[in-house]
Amino acid sequence: MAGTLYIVPTPIGNLGDVSPRAREALEDCDFVACEDTRVGGKLLFLLGIKKELVSHHEHNKKQSAAYIADRISKGERCALISDAGTPAVSDPGEELVAACHKAGVTVTPLPGPCAAVCALSASGLPSRRFVFEGFLPDKGKERKERLSALASERRTAVVYSTPHDIARDLADLAASLGNRRMLFARELTKMNEQTVQTSLAEALRMVENGEIPKKGEMALVIEGADEAAASENAFWADMDVQTHVAHYVALGFSKMDAVKKAAKDRGVPKSAIYDEVR
Image (cartoon, rainbow, N blue to C red; front, side):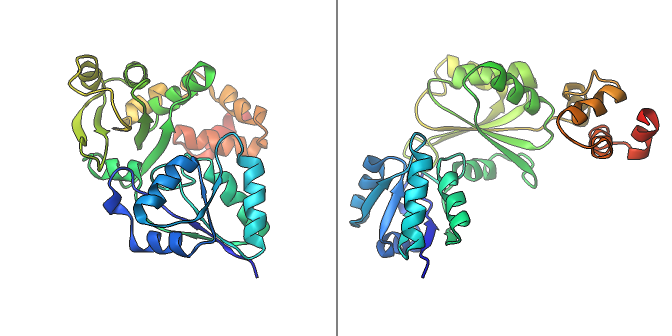
């Protein structure tokens, strides 16, 4: 009989946030898959639990995912944890989850700590629809493309940052998005927790002046673009209709699907686009 992969959220700072179900899953599993066995081992030690730890991280994820999924398919129960928060969200655990689905084994998610949702709930910004960006790419074309996409994103966005990157991230976000409202959340659930409702430019000033220390994990909850800004910053803003449709055709869409996507981008009926390109 196939076993089960349990996706077990772990505290992002406060050990009291371990749920009874998370503790039960860790106690009852046959082994634990984790990013860093030192971090995972410390958590289990604090909970008084002894289990085999199997490393599953960014640099071995393909091989370890196959190994772990094979063990589970033979009947073992595995608890997947991350260094902090919910596994498989901006995390190498997604490779393991995909491998388990492919192997036909049961994947059981447990609810629990997540820095993005925790910060979003405290932001006071629209939360019915939001986008999770995780960490921005370090440099190059991919970073520019992500910043450009955020400039026209109308949903509230959650971005993670580190002490090393925070000043540059804030400067680039302010330059690309304008001086939008935001919540700066640092060290959530920990002793030095800090949340500041501010703006991108003001947050940058506070970081540079030391009012917000460059310490700990950071989540930035950023206001979405208004309709005018979204249209102005959209990748197709300078394209005519023909070029806009050709852009999607070049990406592999059929002409009709390209017409539909261009119409959706522009907020017009597809017939209006089709009339210009047929």
